[in-house]
Image 1: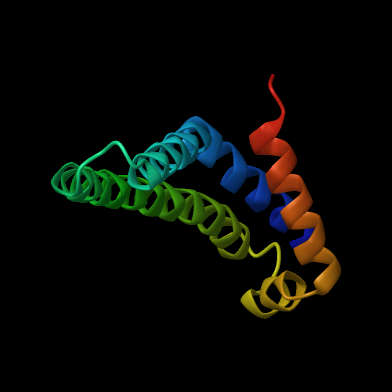
Image 2: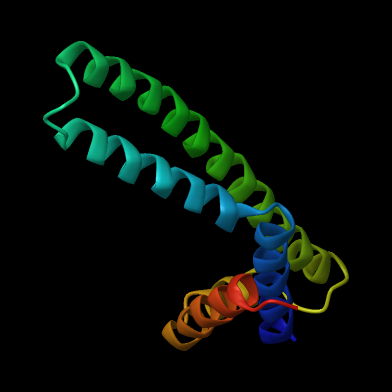
Length: 122
């Protein structure tokens, strides 16, 4: 039963990240970094303009970082709430879920399921 709830927790994590639109936020941050990187390498742009662009990008990337952090925290909370609910319903003990969660196979499957759940378009 612990493995089932771990799987459901992984699914809840991935779906929460998808529902909170994490992937577009990460993509937006990547585009910002590429744009500013190109601007900073450009010989046609003056140093004061480069400095202003770097400051603006730093503020924007800090905002993106904070958005990623709070969305990730909500996704982790969703997974933990699901697993906690199973323990409260006496379907398994906290020790059983902890032992199952650190199994390398479970971790590998968790990573694969999370990536699939976030990338697959439904």
